[in-house]
Amino acid sequence: MALYIPAGARRRRVVLALVGGVLVGLVAGYLLGSATSPDLADEVAEVQGFALDATTALQRIPIEYEQAVAGQGGESTATITGAIDRARGQLDDAYAAAIWLPAEASSATDASFDELAAMVAADATSGELEAAIQGLVAQIETTYGITAEAAG
Image 1 (tube, helix red, strand yellow):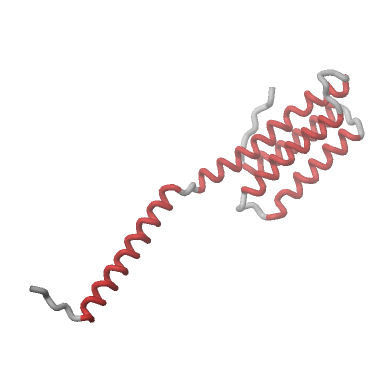
Image 2: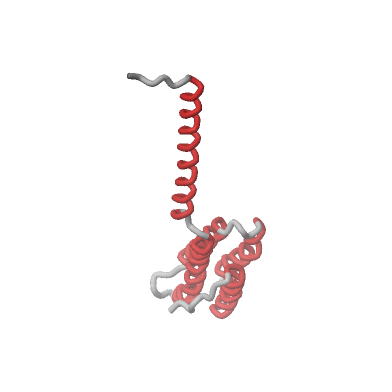
């Protein structure tokens, strides 16, 4: 024997089942998304890692520059300029990932990188270049809240 269920009751059951399924899906999606997405601390650590890579690359330049001036180690003005450009690229990655910094935040360090390149082109002394690099490293440390270890 078959039971008769009015059409209105059937529609109501289907609608309730659909609404329940959508709600369960939304809750499950939210929980899964929350569990797998990086948190703010992860994002900050990633940006600080980019900045730390840039400072490490910068701190190696004085050693390479001394070798270039002395004509040793295969270093030249071109390799020093390339090292400066690579460090600048690493810092650009940090600025791009640091969405909390204003767009003009890189202007001070951009000017310092330009100054370094000009110093290399003008055959500055090793001491002058090292002082300029230390100033730039200090700017980066302040901006990103890091402490760079001296490269060795």
